[in-house]
Length: 284
Image (tube, rainbow, N blue to C red; front, side, top):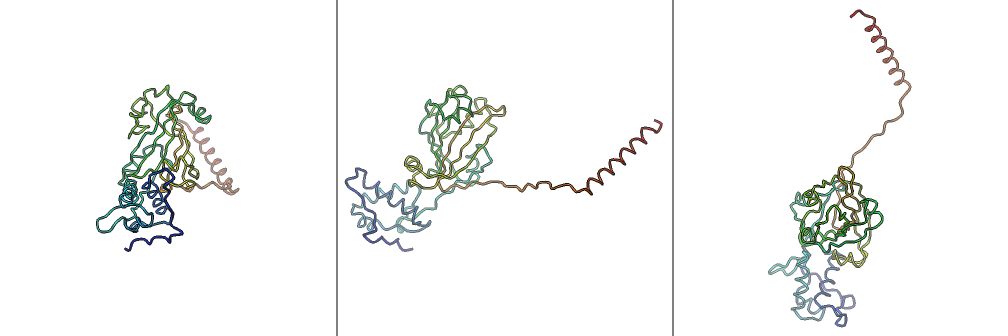
């Protein structure tokens, strides 16, 4: 496969030496956008290091740093003799009707999910969370979940501090939140969820390594235990490479009952009443 052609000079994105950001980071982000927007299919070749040098007017070491950044994100594979090729983006699949168990769902597809905790802090939650948890004394927990090396979900969760006073970033790192709740005597049973399409703002785009205004899937909900106590209220923003599986079933609504059917039931009722009366009159 031939390397991807370099765009004509007037269409080639430029790096800025006045911007203050490292040149390799600017080139990495430009190539990242091209992979997402063109799109370049898995297995497509990127321009060679020499072509990228000429395109951006930088040294080879800068180009190699940019390509290393894309490789670290899992977006390209660097192969000896072939240069850099676009990697297949892993897809996160989750069952919408299941509460928790995401690690197990991912493992069923031969993948591994990793969790990185950004922060755990005492914070007052939104009104909807106060109502769901019946308290304003909560932890706000922010985490990013990675599929292989790709960030696939940013999670913002509120949990009652009275129930879980021991939660720390170290405890939650690469751990299941619901699993920790079970270990401390609270057994999540489920709760209502809803999914809606939203667009990424600058903060979400940075966290999920995507573009501003990129479409995301937002999962919102509350998890309660069997007694109805609120254990968590959460927002989870999923990257575009997420598939929600739903087990949909057809439910047939009963139609109107015909008069003929009512007549037959009445006839059967009279027959049963008659037989019961005969039994009652017969000697024991």
